[in-house]
Every structure is written in C-alpha cells, then in structure tokens.
Image (tube, rainbow, N blue to C red; front, side):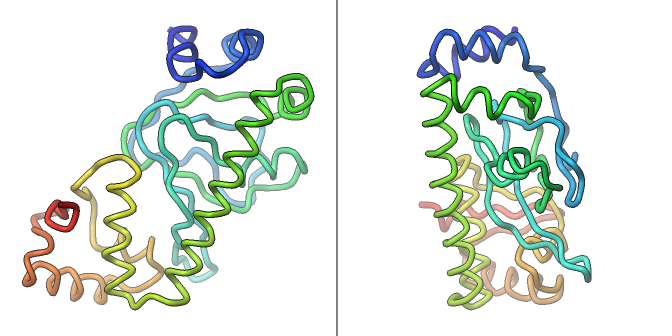
Length: 212
C-alpha cells in the first residue's frame, strides 16, 4: 500500500529515495480535528501530506489561534522541518482540517537525505520558498486588510488550496483562525449572507458564490 502511494504521489523522486521512504515511512490516517504536532513539543517525526487538508497555526497566550497557512497533498510543513533540523521544540501547531492521510518519517533522516538525494533537497527548498510566500501573505492580511476582507480571503484560500466551497465548523473556529472574536465573525457572516456571497446553515458555510 505505501509503495503504491509513494510511487503515485512522488514520481519525481529518485528511485533510491522512494525506496527509502517506503522502508522508513509509516502510512497514517488522521481524523478531522486531530493534532499532529503541538507547540513546544520535540518533534521526533514529520508528516508528508498524501490526502486531505492540514492547517498550521500559532497559539497566543490568551488562547487565540493565528492561521499561518494550509498544507495540501504532496506538501510538507517546513516550519516543523526547520525545528527538526535544529533539534528545537515546535513553534507551530499542525491540525488535520479534514480526514487526512500522511506518511510519517523519522527526523533523523533529514540531514542524511539532504546530502544524499538531490530531489529531496529540491523538494524541501521549494517547500520552504512556498511557505515563506504563504507567511508573507498572512502578514499582509493581518497588517493591511480589514476583517471582512480577511474573512473573504479565508474562504478563498481554502478554495484555492483544496477546491472546497464549504466550511464545516463553528463560527468560533473561524474566529480563532483569524485571531478575532466569535461575535465579530458571526456579524460579518450575516453581512456576507445578506449580500448573497455565502449561504449559512448549522455548522456549515457554503461560500461557492464567491468562488465563481
């Protein structure tokens, strides 16, 4: 099973690298809402996303959550990779947004693979550049966009990441991701619904109108 998954999702890796992932990796199935990596924990393994959607966040002391970026299939969390390579504790929280499949690999392989496999080095470097762009977008959103614009961008980013046009969850979960209050989000969602930008039902937001 793992062999098929790796060959299908990473045809650009060297044969030797794919063999190493098959030998060392563990295929893991994660339910929506499960936490893969907590802040301040030492990371002993890191996930590569095969299917589903993962969000990477930072938690403030008051419990608010700031959404940094999403991971989609074929991607790896480079913030957690940097913690692995530096042997420091995690500075992010990694959570399954929906039912997700990952390949989990031991951190000890990182340095070795960076030296031994050119395609792995390229994969990590490209991932780091993309995550840097994501973090700049997050910074721009927080610094320059009004909350209603950030809320619309929140839905559009989900659509661009995995093609989803619905959000299954509470207003509080959206508020945590945007570092604001549930009351603010509820008010803005009602405004968007009046403008026919979204459709709201119990624990569900259909934002397909803004994706057209």
